[in-house]
Amino acid sequence: MPVLVLDLDNTTFDYNAALAGHVLRTERRVVPAQVPHYSFANSGWFADTDHFLRTHREAVRAGLFAHMAPYPDAIETLHGLREAGWYIKVATHRLIGGIDEHLVRASTLAGLDRVGMPYDEVHFVADKHTVPGDIWADDKPRVLTDLDALGLPRLAYRHAYNAHVPGPGVGSWRELGRYLRTFALEVSAAPA
Ligand SMILES: [Mg+2]
Image (cartoon, rainbow, N blue to C red; front, side):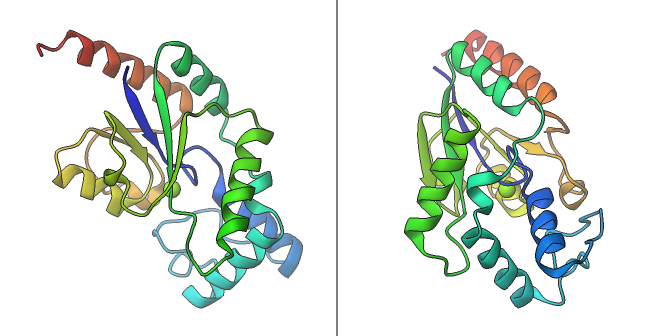
């Protein structure tokens, strides 16, 4: 069966919207709508990276991971893929920024359960390519280019900050589902 290695934040779940909501509630501040750089500080959301990490930690302690909303059609698409035989490995780098590890793990699992997300494994890992799979889906430019350098199939979940990375990408979960169904047909049709 084909194995998908799937990122959570800004690939499956709308991290940007969740963090923007936290900033609005706690700092009474509206962040810029666009995130042109893979750095919230460089995108004008925070004064610097320390400010971002501090806010991120506060947001996680306030339940960010447990209550984040998935992108439209993500959960339905994952159910469809699983029914079609896909094995889903979640691979997330949420253990950053010196937050209590137990809290991150527990609130992540609670967040997946809350929205009924189907999955087979969860990995907390920075280097996504170390999780074996057939294809990876991620939004982080360095993850995408690392996978490219290793010749591993991957799909970019498109945002302004990864638009410069060439290669296959999708802008919605409907598109992602279509891409993976075609990918599975091509893999099963390929000579061994
Ligand atoms: Mg991500």
